[in-house]
Image (cartoon, rainbow, N blue to C red; front, side, top):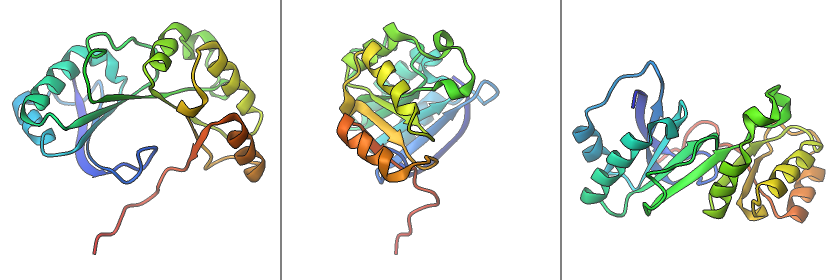
Length: 192
């Protein structure tokens, strides 16, 4: 597992405002000292792992998680994934939440290269959160197609509406379909 950077801060997405330790993975990052990393993470209520597909590092994440749980069993992990890889080795572990970031056709990526239905069905069955960025209301139809094909419950879908065109119409459509909406917090919190 190669780490690009580590830092602490508040979550600025769907678990908004929770204090966490963040680990951003990168192929060109450094190989961490796991003993120091376990002790550091155990001082935080949440550890968020993201960046270069974290589930490529399932074995290392499992070892890290188990070590942190021995020190601090209440620490939770959030793993941000693209939903292409089964999280085998992590499936029986408590206190892990998966955030699956779906890509829509506007990315120019072929459907079969961006949507792995069998894997998404596993994440849906296990109550993972599904995060989607949209810009136009037509993209809601694509989300609905993916939701239906992968058997995702509407209440597990979080739609980032920051860049959307059509404002209130999209908000109403999300309401009627049962989707959650969010905006990513920019900047930081001020503690006085």
